[in-house]
Amino acid sequence: MQAGAAIIFLMSALFLTSQVASLVLRPAPFLRRRISVEGKSRLSFRPMAAAEPASGDGLKKGIAEFYDESSGIWENIWGDHMHHGFYEADSSATLAGHRDAQVRMVEEALHFAGVSDDPLKKPMRIVDVGCGIGGSSRYLAKKYGAQVQGITLSPVQAKRAQDLTMAAELADKVSFQVADALDQPFPDGQFNLVWSMESGEHMPDKEKFVRELARVAAPGGIIIIVTWCHRDLLPSEEELKPDEINLLNKICKAYYLPKWCSAADYVHIAGSLPLQVKLPKTR
Image 1 (cartoon, rainbow, N blue to C red):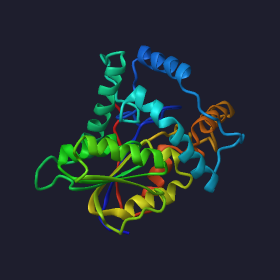
Image 2 (image 1 turned 135 degrees about the vertical axis):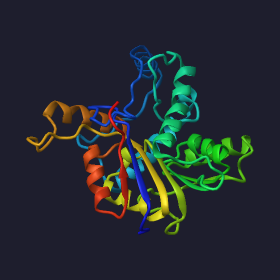
Image 3 (image 1 turned 120 degrees about the horizontal axis):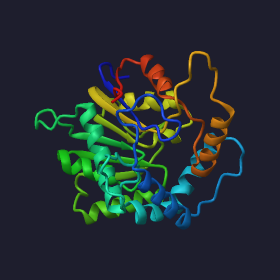
Image 4 (image 1 turned 90 degrees about the vertical axis):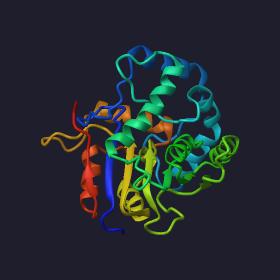
């Protein structure tokens, strides 16, 4: 464990949104409806057979196969950034507007985390945990002139990410490999920016996930997690309401997700580690 590494949480709570609103997604209703309709008509994924969220090797295999099969479709619709966007009130209700919002999400995360553009302070060693087809990896490499390594469970994603990176003439700065985010193939303290954009929701062991991010972070480094969370429980609650649990289980079955957690759960995990925690303020 690297003492002094800073951890920055940016919770993009897509469903049952929690109180952390700085980077809670705020899609324009028309755009959200349009993307949903288009996605429903064009996307056809094999759902999980189990009634409960999967775990263990079955979950890893399911995630890998899910993205092996679906990444090409996501790329056709969303481009090379395989994550949601940060929407302003005047965001364009078009696919081009959505792709602009995806880049804005990256910039909002970097801005909130206080990642420096100063040549003497900017991150030069970055890991993209759950890299998809490398959209964030290439963006960060170009923005900072950094060396970036991306990891994914999907061999199809890793190959496509590398092909796109070669086409962008960034192969000397960005590389990809198939690897498990819970057991990363990197030494301790390797990266001064650890980036996880909408991959944490796939992790069956959130504590192990955060510990592994902290392990590979250099002392004084920054860890940014943008992930799906359910709402924080009230003091009087022991669990979510039955209809909320039912909704989340449906999402888990469709997207190969384990059980969800809240922003407060992440804060609790981080509090057990030698990390500084920063959360967005409601705005």
